Length: 111
Length: 115
Image (cartoon, rainbow over all chains, first blue to last red; front, side, top):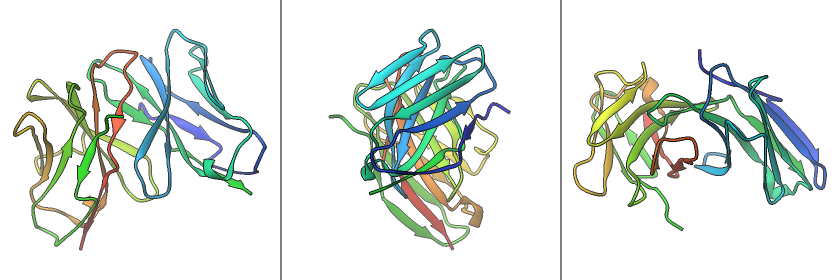
């Protein structure tokens, strides 16, 4: 299977704390992308990291990629209640542009 | 900001009926995709479409499914004879390319309920 795994499956933190989510995958990748999904809603693209990159920042988000370990992490710093959502990693592989999604991490940020 | 739009947002249909889910990808994008997400589960790839033909499809995308780009803007997913297990959120996505630096833009999804 090409599916990735994410951990933790669920994470509950207080506002202001940092949240770290991890993602592992099994195949070679072109890129790895992180998405957010509010309950029952669409997927919002957060950040893309290429296979030759090791770290990328966007606002309060930091993504790392370790291709030797086939893993990535998403760090959200100074979390806010509005960050409450499910977070998915997805990796692109092959030459058709399809994405393989992980199981997701459900993040709850308590005010 | 350009966005992918999907209609309807929610569709309820009787088992055995045909449904067509509609998507308008971002205008300068060339690659189009359908994904589905059964409630509480992960997002699963269904099909990719480029240059008016399917470039890849998953095991889920059987003969009951078809895709079409009937004009220059719409991209549709048809399910010929719906089953209860087709109930899911269906997402359309588009990209301008398929290479490493291409992010996929997703629509808000169509929630399909088969009763």
